[in-house]
Amino acid sequence: MPQPLTPPAGAASATVCVFDAYGTLFDVAAAARNLAAQPGKESFARIWPRLSEIWRAKQLQYTWLRAAAGVHADFWTVTAQALDYAIEAVGPEAAPEREALLALYRRLDAYPEAPAALRALRAAGLRTAILSNGTPDMLADAVESAGMADLLDATLSVESVGVFKPAPAAYALVERHFGVPAGQVLFLSSNGWDAAGAAGYGFRAAWVNRAGDPVERLPWRPAAILRDLSGVPALAGVA
Image (tube, rainbow, N blue to C red; front, side, top):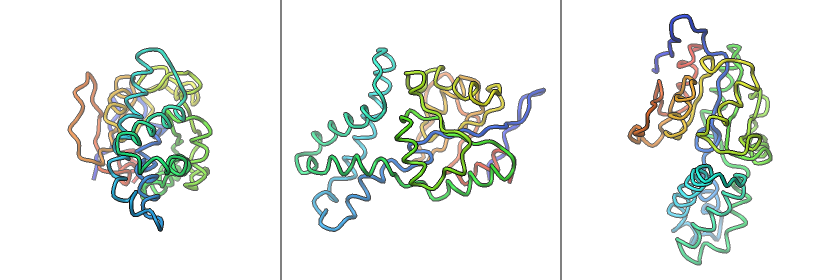
């Protein structure tokens, strides 16, 4: 069981728990996997794992490159462009599935342990939120589809600052919205680079390392590493 994060001497306990959305609360592989499971999709079923992997990798790469170059496009545009790259990479049999994949991406499956973790945090009096690269309408669709609307106090999109995480301006949205200092925020992400960026910003960051990957070689490291979201209440000291 994860140990609760102990605040630095003189610091208050975390009062807000903030989650990345894609890959943390919502399974980014679900769009391709669910399409492959539909009747008549046997050909797509043979290629979906590779397509999904390339799609996600390019989606993230495009956010980093756009942020570094100062050429922003919203996350829905980036997601579609990454899918186009992935379709070309895996072959023509994936091309007819483009629109279906994009539609399914709007209603990704939530990880099964996510609702219970959010309920436990809210029952203990902590405020909960999403901070995501996703656009407001993408996030609204995902939250509604997952039935999580009543489990979140806020859904924050980087579109309001026009730069993707891990830019400090993106993390600053949490302090601005909730009116709390960074040290009172527990931030959770399945992306090692995101957890590192949040730690560098000053959040109490935890990495949800679902894949068992190595820790990123960056200047900052998360204060805790979890296998999934089931350990979040204990980490927050409410279980």
